Length: 367
Image (cartoon, rainbow, N blue to C red; front, side):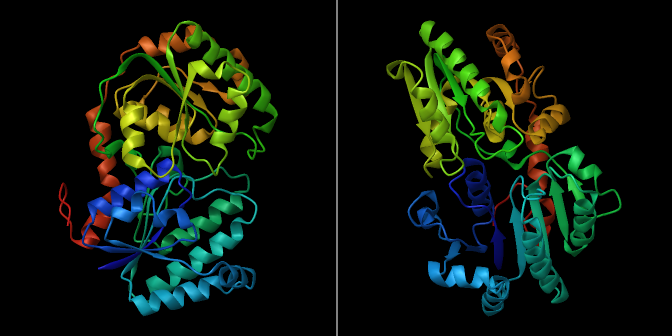
């Protein structure tokens, strides 16, 4: 079976984990991905034999994109490949951002073409929003009718489409990641950072955010803890903000952990960290499944939604209120023994259930 996989490929750890999990769950399916990012020729993806990357020369891609012919070209290629379905997998893939209508039209074009030819469309692992215009929701309410199944990762997104029987809600896919937990390094603390540079709703808090992170880092360095600053995605500016912070502290006392498409070694290192301050969405999920002590800092409603849905933490701090965060509050949350609720991990696997049925996979197996 051959399936088109629509996924964000920018060496972002969360999306790369989605990719790893779907390739390993369905090893006998050949997955086709339109991908212009050359990094995926040599990173973790190179070991998988069941994935094909379709890449155009840059000049041809640019011409097709600017002339609005890219969708037609992609559909022509898909027709030649005789694909059985499309699967879109990712987190924040339904945001009302500038130019959202172009992506909407691409989806409408592909999904309607596939459905009219008796083929299936699936969406896994996403949340809906943020959005401001109710017409954005209404547009997708109509488009989602082209899907065989869409499984959100939060109850809020699910609640927006009460009339659609093909809409479900299960925990984030990464909850079901099989991760090998390492022995924790005593008095180690990691901080997952996120850039606010291109987040218009948060850019005004950039300096306050950095100053608070510097305060926290200096505190733990003074206590002789092993401090590690963690980047999940270079392209989205994580490394840039880390370097900004490093220029304001004693670099000799602080370690860094940068994700560069090296999933296994990255997971091994982050799993050995005893405590995590989680700014990135999936740093929170990883901290939970790795049974690390953690404190969440919230840059997006999607994170607070999932914390509320599954009671993952007793407290959290939104970046808009970061100046009020104290070391005492962080330490108090660290000391609460959250444990791992296995039912959340088990329910997470249900994200794949409808796709399993289509492919012919029984629960708990790989094909």
